[in-house]
Image (cartoon, rainbow, N blue to C red; front, side):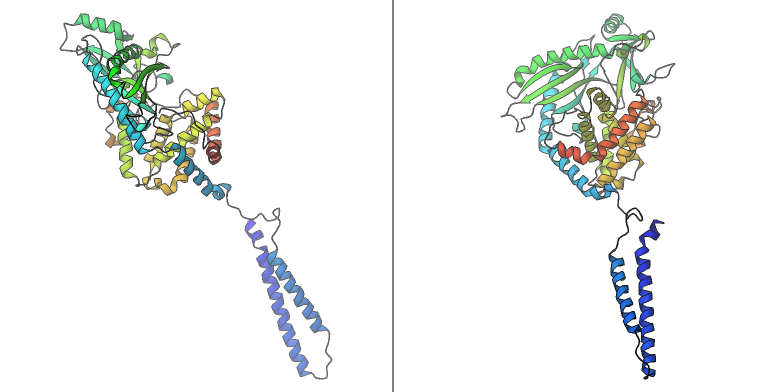
Length: 485
């Protein structure tokens, strides 16, 4: 029916032209008849036909210029998004260039300075070794957005794993599956770090007993390395190491250690005459246990209020940062040279931050927790693996951002975002993920969140995306709270 309405002026125009042609033919025939009858008197028909022809011309012009009322035949319109797409992309690009994109020069200098200071710290920790205690392995592992090329705002936050070793008289036996029960949502993605006596040290029962008393918790009557005790030891150890090198660092930078939410933060302020980029930097130092195959167990702050058999201090987070970096490196080769997948991740993180500052504090915390960097990166991994990778060319930036928002809303509505590695039997083979990681129970990163809360986040996410260009324009010169991840 709309198509018929849209063609009504054309039909009237054709009908009018046919009538005009008919009248012209009739006039021509009449004139020929008049020439054949000289005695006949001229009638009034020529005047009438001329008037009709004039009226027909008038109606032709009127119909050609006339447009039907919207209530009778609404004109075809493009969606509003199609009209504003160039403007939206232009504003997103401007915000990305001026607020999000980092200078490779500044980032490179910052990373080099952080690595140098932390390397000196762990070197001291490795030298000060005790037989019945933990010790540093002597290196650090770079993780997080600053090393995965999707850091935003400023290169002022870094994350580093500091691997530690247990005494040689003990052997680590990680357990990635909680025996005999389903894993509670607050323990999903964690593992036990059990300890067994080494075959080479059967006579060192006294040393093992001392170590167990200092660093272990008991789970089902078996000793397991306590993340809370290791974290406490790590804080004290780092302070002692800093006191050793503090004098050596005074000429280069100011170095301090502080504890924020049970996390150890190393703060660096380079001297202006030492590096060209005089930026205050915060480095989160995270104690970690390497259990083989590039898998790390990372200590977590202890939470009160959990049942005694499931004391959180006995559990460690499973970190697969090396596998994530390997997947990102593979994507860098397989995607187009001007791929926008990391840019999409950065813009999504910026939208999260813009939304967080618009909401009340309670919901803002929940918003940032659900849309944390790790969850956004996991959603992007799933979307990229679906393919095709050629579709991530820079020219399709807006389409890929829409896909990412749509994928997130589907996950929120289904209350399910599965871990890309843990329990995923279809993980890409080239990542060489250990079999024990693939065979654990699948981990849902959205488990434990209320359905109404996830629906609200889904609604606000769509609202944020629809008004992204306006929010970015309003916040173009404002400083947002920065997330170290």
